[in-house]
Amino acid sequence: MCAPRASRLTASARARLLQGLHYCHKNNILHRDIKGSNILIDNAGTVKIADFGLARSYAGQESTNALTNRACARGVAPAPPRTRA
View 1: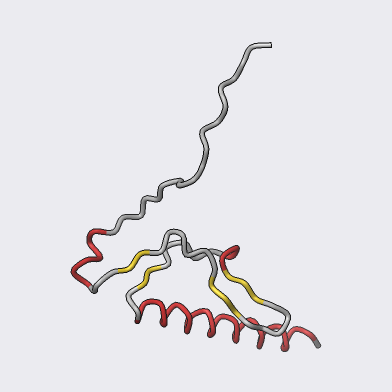
View 2: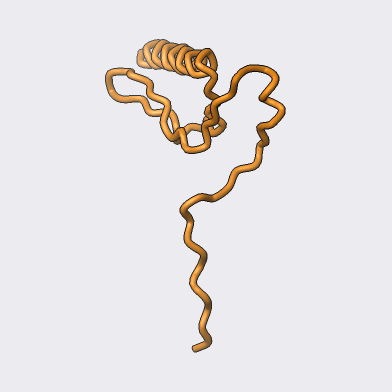
C-alpha cells in the first residue's frame, strides 16, 4: 500500500527539483554539480538544491561557450609528506 504514496512523493520531488532548476536557469545560474547528495528532501517533502560551490552565472547563450566541465579543488590542503619509519 505504500508504493503508490511513495511514487507520488517521488514524482512530486522530481517536479519540484525541475522547478528549482528552471528558476536557477531563468536567472542565469548554472549549478554544475547536480547529484543525489546535493538534493535535500525533508520529511514534509520540501525539496532544496544545495552546494552551489561550482555554480556559475552566465549572461545568455553567447557566454556558455566559455564554461568548461572542469572543476578545481578549492580549499583542499595538499597531503602531508610521507616519512620513512
